[in-house]
Image (cartoon, rainbow, N blue to C red; front, side, top):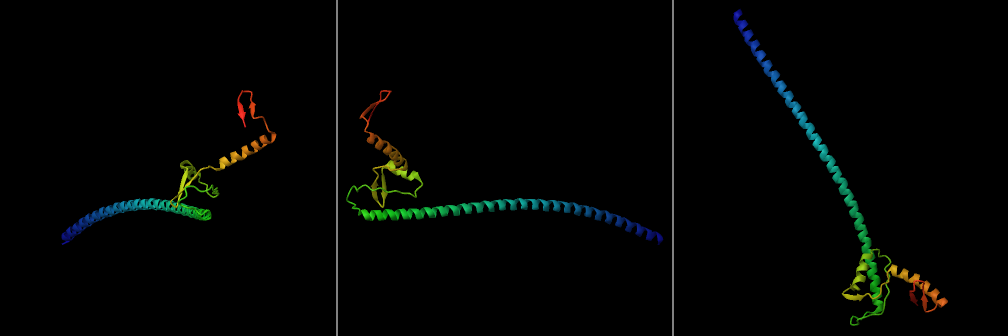
Amino acid sequence: MLKMMQDIGNKLEAKMDNSQETLSKDIQDIKLKQEEMQNTITEIKNSLEAANSRIQEAEEQISKVEDRLVEITDVEQKREKRLKTNEESLRDLWDRVKINPRRNSLGHILIKLTKIKDEKILKAAREKKQITYKRNPIRLSADFSAEILQARREWHDILNMMKGKKPPTKTTLPSKALIQI
């Protein structure tokens, strides 16, 4: 009986050792899996942080674009208001002149557009020598741009001074060029 008890004790001890080894292996496996999960969680956190930073950058860019859009719409609204006032003043002028559509030419009208800063439109109109307004052609016969008016003012003073002194009609310069006034 004693021997039997010893055999049972030895068997239990062997089973306990075997169970302990199995448990220690399971614990090691669990620790390894826990470390892997921890690494995976860290990677997920890093990728989330990167995604969040990209989202914040995108939101900042979107807000900048929205601000720029608001600025552009404000400028466009101001331009529309100026265009409407110019059209109204042109309509008033048109009504005052009492345009006859059968008539080819009107008298000369000088229009000064002080609020238009974009010279490209005016230069293109000058090149074509014609503008169409409400399906009626308007012919441009004279160029009164700011540069030309300034040049005329400068020469006006010189010519008035020369008329006052009454120089001879022909003047010979040292290079033998003749000037006729």
